[in-house]
Amino acid sequence: MEKRDAKMKALFSYAPYDNRLEETDIPSAGPGELVVKVLGCGICAGDVKSYHGGIRIWGTSLENRYIEAPVIGGHEFFGEVVEIGEGMDSYSLGEWVTAEQIAPCGECEFCRQGKYWMCQESAVYGFKQHIHGGFAEYIRLHKNSRIHKLPKSFTPEQAVLVEPIACGMHAVEMAEIGHDDTVVIAGLGAIGTSMVNLAGLYLPKQIIGIDVKPFRMEMGKKYGADYVLNPMECNVEEEIRKRTGGYGCDVYIEASGSPRSVTQGLQSLKNHGRYVQMGVFAEEVKADWNIIGDGKELSIRGSHLSALTFCSVIKGIESGLIKTEGLISHSFGLEQWEEAFEAAEKAPQAMKVMLRP
Image (tube, rainbow, N blue to C red):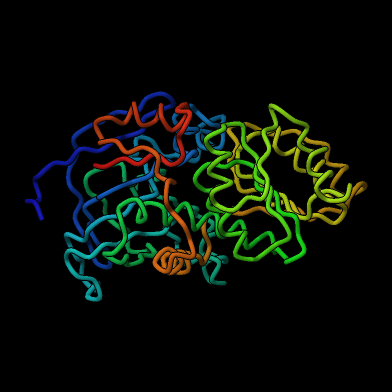
């Protein structure tokens, strides 16, 4: 480990459209903590929306702002243990680890009930100043972190994908998929495409993927979608009804973060269908809420973070049941962060973009 007065490069978020690559102190490990040399960190759609001033992150005032700027972003990280704090004897220097995106307080009602991912403090790496994120050369894993060891057989790409795939797995769990179900997954980015794979493990009747980018539609097919639909080229609701005897789908998982997808989902579901909201919106969404109750008696569920899925995702990737090939589409050095963010937002073949500090 470098000397304590050594510096590292880190990407700080100061304000919407104001990210700065700066030098800062390398963190130290306190009791119950680790310092990790970051080997890779994925760019989440939420990171891009944060950069563009998404209301979910920046709020409408200082009072309802979620982010504590300036802060080092990034919550899809993994790396090598380089410093071990007191009480962390089960870890060894050189081990590969990742941490879940939230560092729960351990004291609120939800933490006491074991539902730590719903922690009232909601401290997610890369958004709070006491848990700076992985867009940096080193990261300190907070004492409340939920840390997971990674097999050295993993590629860096597989290691970076653990967090986003875990979020997708939780959303699929919330859908309670049955073998006779028609499952629709809207948004075939890296998480949505992985959810096609994960939903397929339940052996439903059919899986339909939705996206507007041809490359992502092809990825959806490769990952097991029976059909893929482009809402720019067809009436999605009609196409789904054609493939379900006129009834509609049983499950609609919204993973795109597009407001139009909400209306599309409500209209595509059959009576007693199940809608799962996983995607993050940059703005408030309007929809005909009457469809839910007076119309179809739908079940609406939210999916937040990754819950208890990290261990299963690591096991699934290691066994080959969970596929990862092609989900990392671009890789950039930390100094190329502007190019990386642009690729994540605009590149025709973008899936998950990874920064390599």
